[in-house]
Length: 189
Image 1 (cartoon, rainbow, N blue to C red):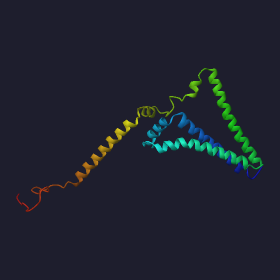
Image 2 (cartoon, rainbow, N blue to C red; image 1 turned 45 degrees about the vertical axis):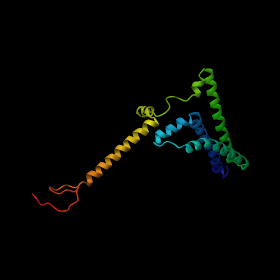
Image 3 (cartoon, rainbow, N blue to C red; image 1 turned 60 degrees about the vertical axis):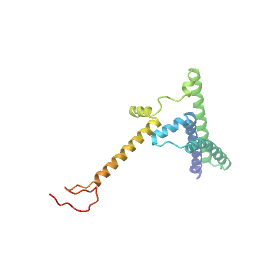
């Protein structure tokens, strides 16, 4: 065993992490669809993502492919012949082979069962487990939420103005008027 075992293993695990993030980007942005993903983010955060954020989501997949390639090349060029590096490379190879093998077996099984399209299509029931959240998500539309937001903001502002007016009203004393200019005070009872 080498003293560099953890360093080598960490380097390879970073490559695995980049690969997993790249796969998630592919599934959520490209396969699930940029517009549906954007609508989900809008629903979760309450703010619609700008077009620059959507562009970053698209570009990030290509950036991750580039980073994965350069990291693999760098790890291969800078490898040292230690036991830790050898074990780390075998670990990486096993992960990649198992991922590809499981995917191929599932696709062949789906072709055998004649439901390849069902296996490749996204689950329509995908989403929150809670029935209340699922119904809330189904009712969500950006236009309706914007109208509701504007309605609430209008009524909140109206309530604030009304409270301010009430707090600024002075208790009127009999015979004293605040709405006209006072030239003389009437002391009648």
